[in-house]
Image 1 (cartoon, helix red, strand yellow):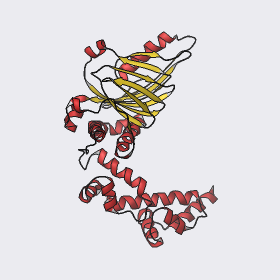
Image 2: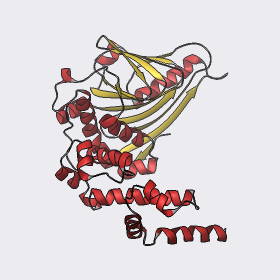
Image 3: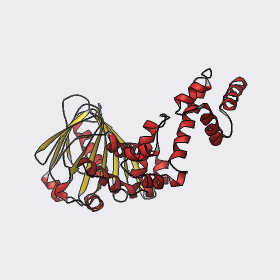
Image 4: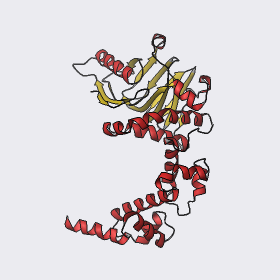
Length: 330
């Protein structure tokens, strides 16, 4: 059932063959659902037996985001559908589980779990998936992405499966995170999210071409990039601002601009380390505080105590005592 949520609407749908729903009826329903969520296509099952399909789609004013899983299927965009298309879009397929084989521009792309690939909605396309494959599919106006990236249409890295690692992983994590948001959270962040979709996709296509992202310091992509690096490195006591900036392919000045509204990169690392220490204190009440300090990335116990108190208002020992007192009350 479609729910209106400001400038975004989210719908969930599920179709399966049963004793009362024939394969033909199920696929007529599924084609209509996919047409609304992504693009009109001809869809048919691969193999025999029961078939099922399920998706959750968020439609913004100009873009959409769909999480889809199904039994093995073949999807084709026909010439008639291309001629009748109301708009032209960049399609992005992020494979979460399973695999698919997609043909476009005379090239067959094999996309396995953990890959991302780009397609042009205005060109013929045929795709086949494995059983219970799961994908996050992003659709955005082609002109928006091209304008933001400063590319011509023929320069797009069409029909190439790329690993969702490194800087590309930042883009993939952003869209997979969007797909997992509740309807309430999507509503609350709809304006911000849609405004960043074209920017994130332009960053992705430029990265796929081996070029630098054009994302400004205040963009979601840049912030996600910094957070991704810090999440991987914050437990390293020798981590420096220069190393973070280098890993993010930006200057120290840009890094400070990205983090200026949260007190700077050092403050963000400190909060990550303290939060990690709090998790360790909860998980292992008998572990020595010095060991927790080291495991959380603090170079000395003194730095640990000072940072912990600055962030929580209590010392690590007092925090542990509060946990013990809470357990005794239960």
